Length: 86
Image 1 (cartoon, helix red, strand yellow):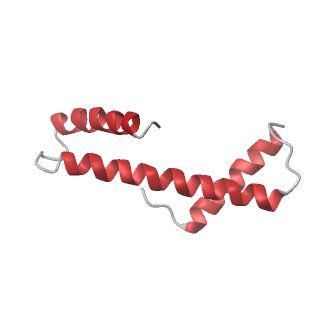
Image 2 (cartoon, helix red, strand yellow; image 1 turned 60 degrees about the vertical axis):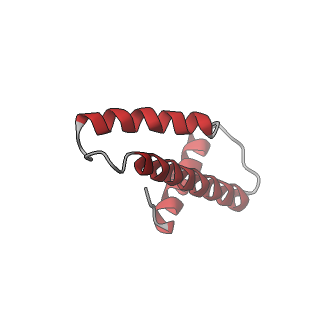
């Protein structure tokens, strides 16, 4: 799933606001913390895309949208996450 830089920035700000409002973290350098959240989200979505691409490659000969495809997609997705130790 591709997210724009603006969407990732928005999500990062929401996460930081929630951390602050729920008193879950004390941040001394807000800019650095925000950059780290953005970096983490970008890395997460990149790995999610890689896993999705790998699973779809395994299923390229199946009819997308069928019940069989959905079941195998979930199975292969979980296997790929385990293989990548995520």
